[in-house]
Image (cartoon, rainbow, N blue to C red; front, side, top):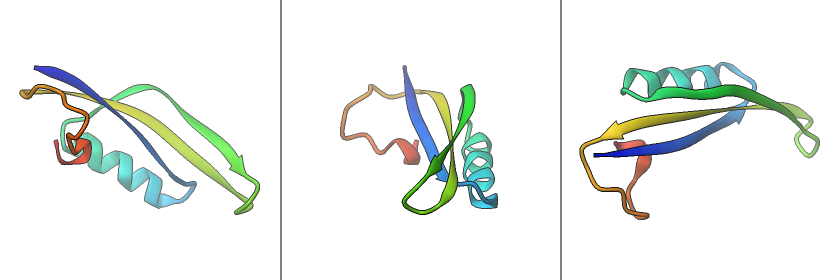
Length: 68
């Protein structure tokens, strides 16, 4: 069994909330607090959230984390 980690990020729109909600629905758990920062190139706010999940597989660097 391995614990795997992902950092989800997206523009500060409902798309970010949907991305996090989808991960939670697939068994991922929130890890830490969400973050928000201003992207000066795009002129918008960006959000981020770390998530973790225990999986019944050995971790390898070529593992597709989103498919777990």
